[in-house]
Length: 206
Image (tube, rainbow, N blue to C red; front, side, top):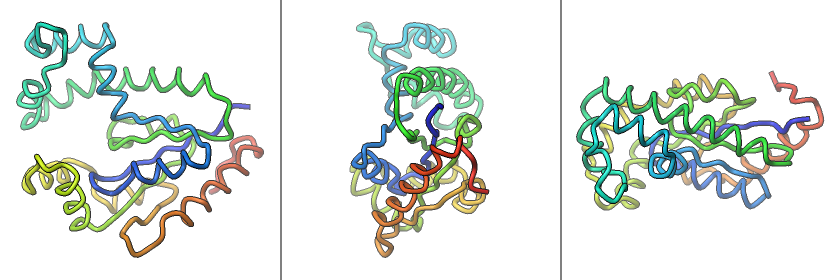
């Protein structure tokens, strides 16, 4: 029997990485889609070739390292360019995740991704958890974490992501990470439920 596949998503600054760290403390394997995407853009030969074909050789420097500033300038204000890049990167991440998941023996696994719904990767998962927090708190967290960012840039990222209400509507479960509600009990409850679901032939809760 294959293990359950659970997705964890949330807007920038929601704390989804913190939630995933706690899941990992319970022994749950976690796949970090965003960090793997960066790794693949740097190391996957086929993906690098496709990115160069789409954005030019300047997408990588002479040493073969990805030119993040160049790509950022190309895609940040262009929906078409973003869609082209995502259309290259998301399938590569999907293939990488599938290989990763098949190699594991676990009651369930976690896939963390910011663009879970936008990329379509939710379709291959059994359950989706949305991590939510008030927008003001999310902005504060990102400003504290990423000192190079400005509030205007963070707001631009938020506007490009699905709204909180839309993510909640599309998700099966929600974790509130507003620093008023304790998140460990919320995660522990889900951990127990998913561990039990593994023995029910991946039966959905709804």
